[in-house]
Image 1 (cartoon, rainbow, N blue to C red):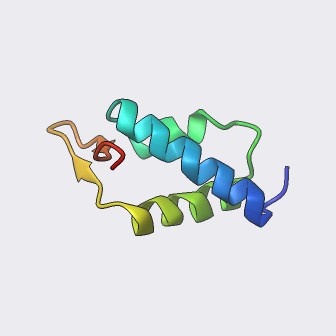
Image 2: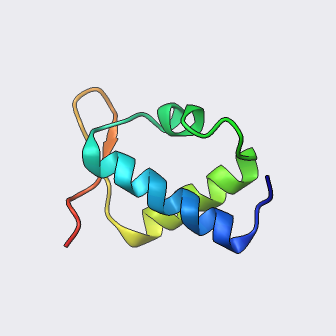
Image 3: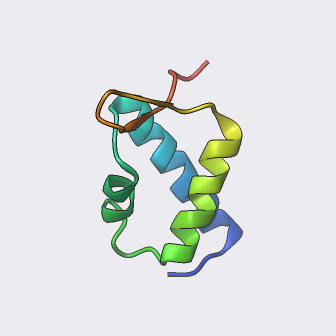
Length: 68
């Protein structure tokens, strides 16, 4: 799998959806996409962090606010 722009955008959308559904550690997000290159995951993570302000729960898991 590549680190193309569409792939990074797809991963960012998927990560954000997962974080809106329930709190997760970053490693949980990485493990959810075993077929994706780590570089693509990091680029997508950066996109998520640019798009929304993430919070953390008492266990240190990230969570995103509901979609507007």
